[in-house]
Length: 158
Image (cartoon, rainbow, N blue to C red; front, side, top):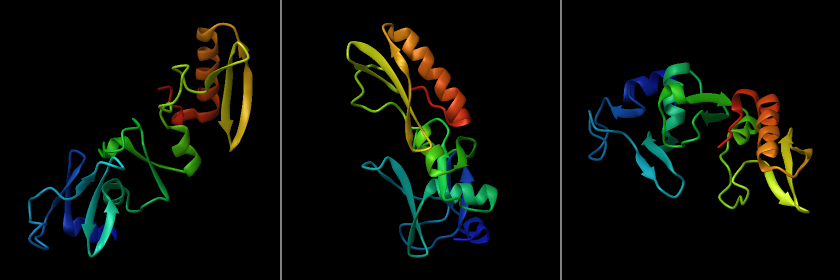
């Protein structure tokens, strides 16, 4: 898909794409483009016999290119408003992930081990240790500061 082709086929409005042209009975001019894949939590758009992530098409329409990775700033994968999309590396995209569902401490990068709260953070694909603490609030503060320092704009504390 090219920049020109995307603009020929779609109009962008409030995080969604709308067909400009009728290409078949399921893609009528003026209708919202794409379908939601609930298993993956993302919208897909089929055009020219190929399936595209809606976020990638929106990014292309605004920036003229499709980067290898697109990160959703707020971490919500179906929020494809252009202000919520940014180019990222695979590592940056991983840094913006939310706390895993199986997390038992309630905080990212903190786990209870040997009767203490342990803070560990992955930096450049390596685990880094930031200490063991009796106090969970102190461990959380250390984890937040470490994420801010090493993850920068991609730090996600949720």
